[in-house]
Length: 352
View 1 (cartoon, helix red, strand yellow):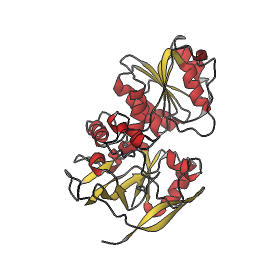
View 2 (cartoon, one colour; view 1 turned 180 degrees about the horizontal axis):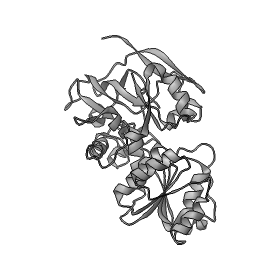
View 3 (cartoon, one colour; view 1 turned 180 degrees about the vertical axis):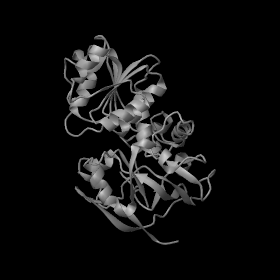
View 4 (cartoon, one colour; view 1 turned 120 degrees about the horizontal axis):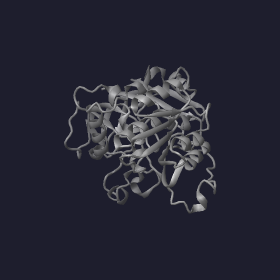
């Protein structure tokens, strides 16, 4: 086996480089995956721009599909050569936070479960070390392609969690602000949870069309209409039961709050930069029985198993989200495309 590999490395704000790095060593509880497909996340763009801090020299990326190359001596139930995914969030499964049902905050630290491409080397590389492999590897069912399962580690898990944390119920009216990859998955998740009227807010025609295919009943173009005013018209002044924020801006967060019925839930998925303000009128001075919930992508092998079941059942087809394919050798160009949102890009499949 060779000793080095190609990897995308964060060098400094504005600079990600393809470098030759040592193939990771593994410990007793780890696994080494040979990455067959990965992708670029919006959070990676925040890292690239210096809006989310990571240490220089870190290999980034947190959405791996791959084949087990090596297993630590303490890892059982898996085999070398097995095709698997691992979630973007890799909890230990044993700490107080994990056992308390909030494994994304593993170790009692904010975002503690997010290690890959954040606190340890990630998967935009030929190989990646998966920590706590017993809790985080999930076999990919036969017959499913890499592209079909590529959204499971992060985008699908995060988007679905918007509907889950918002406690969408049968018969609910739900609005999802922004139909990027996470917003599209939130739309699909709201439909699976039983929402009977789903409103998507999006101006890009191609994204609006995919939103309709995934469950949106109405799409509001925010460049043509005021979304909150339109939502109030659609709901006869009632407001929505659940508003899902999937972009991470003051404008969309505030619009979600204004679109809610009294007692409604704002389910926030966005990664915010800078100051986020809470307008007193929209918040009813704190007396509107609103709920604001935030969610970091659920991870772990049981979460991944459930998402793979959804894909295998054909209830949701997320392959239209993979709009571009690049070799790992060309990942710098892929970042340029994705960060600048050119050519109708939604998600990029990166293949070492």
